[in-house]
Length: 155
Image (cartoon, rainbow, N blue to C red; front, side, top):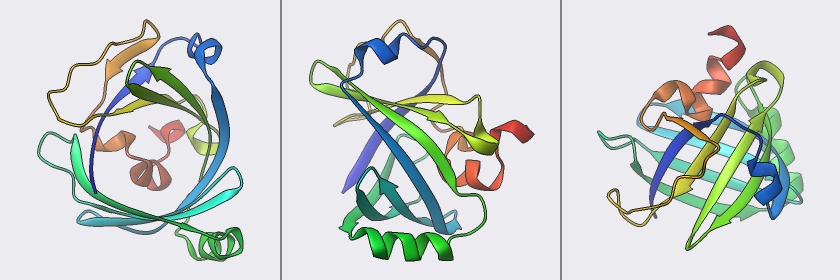
C-alpha cells in the first residue's frame, strides 16, 4: 500500500520500440485535496478507483489504495469528476526486475511525455534508459492531479 516511484521527462520516442504493452487511459479526479487524491480511471477494458495520500518530503513515497471497479461504475464516476479529465496512452517497458511506464498525454497536456518507475525502496538502484531526461520526482506540476487543474499547455 506504500507507493514508491520516481518520475522523469522523456526526451526521445525510442521507448516505443521497447514497449510490450500499450494502453489508452482516461482518468478524472473526485478530490485533489493535498492530503489525499481520489481518482477514477478507465485503463483499456478495466476500471479503477484509487486513493492516494500526501507525498513524502522527497516526493517519492505515498500511501496508495486501488480497487478494480466495473466499467459502468467507472464511467459514472468519471461524469462526477472535477474538470480536467486526463487522456493519455501508456507504454509499459520491462527493464530487469522493474517496469517503466511512459505516458504520452493528449488534450490540454499535449506535448508532455513522462516516465515513471515503481521501486521497493527510495534508494533502490535502477538502470536509466537513454530516452530518459530530467528527473521531476517531487515536482507537483507533473502529478496527474495537478495536470488536471493546471494543464501542461498553459505553463
